[in-house]
Length: 431
Image (cartoon, rainbow, N blue to C red; front, side, top):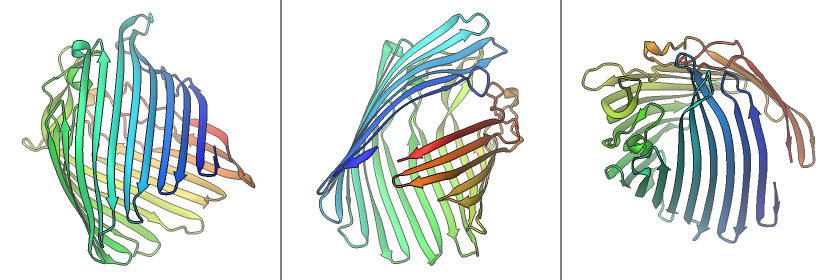
């Protein structure tokens, strides 16, 4: 990593190997990453190129004597060019590409014999052009277009190959009609070759009630598109469904945020999502699975977040989310989606010298009983670091983590149990 004049550069190469923290979850990966940036007059450009080669075990189904594993190879790149037309106006070009070669293995665990091997080649290219200006007083206008092309090849894809083409155009404006009020209207049009076209309007409003408190409101229309493999792919007990439609959603949010309470920042949000033709995985006789447009769903609830200011080097923070997810027609609760979650954290230290963090997380998944899930416990992790010394341009830091501090069991599906307590120690050199 370094910089010479207007040219910056970064190069990373590494290897990661693990026997897995649970049985049959070995992991081996080679990584290579390069990034460079260049600044010249009104132009700022950066380019990155990366490569991953991975071999991993994905777990074992003891009941069925099956073992899952895969070999993955990925080459990806990104180019960003920002050109300032003047102090208020900017034009940006973004190009991305990725090539994935994947081989998935289904084996009989007792004998090691291959029962099924799936090879997939997935190519994806994205380009976007964005225009942004603050030339008009009290306005920040952003407009752009995006083009995407994807190719999926496999012997387990109908006709061996499928293509995805997307085109979108969007515009939004952030308006300040009054000093305390900000309004952001927007609209986006999407063309998706495998499903329908879609128009997504949105509007957001922020009102500063006082210097340290604000109210937020937001409404938007959006969609989710099925993947090419869900439409045309098969294998590993999975069946295609070429009749899938996009899922469509109206989203509404209302929130309040304040730091008016002494020593405390609080943020709360009410939300409502009306989802039509929700994409869901269902299981068929014989153990096969297929994705269908099964439900019209109403998802509503609230979120609460808080964080204290440092008090004698201690900081306490956390969050709580409660979600009610029901079929809009039958009023039946939807299984397999979290009903509520809790995040807690306690920090002690001085960030520029040392820091100790205790973090806990709990999620109630409301999963089907036949999955034999066990998720009654919090999972706590303990992290810490200490800067050992600083020299001109160099810093040596020691760090450590104890994950699953109390060795608790937590999993929604017994096929994928969580790791037991583990310890991680290391050194970081910054230069």
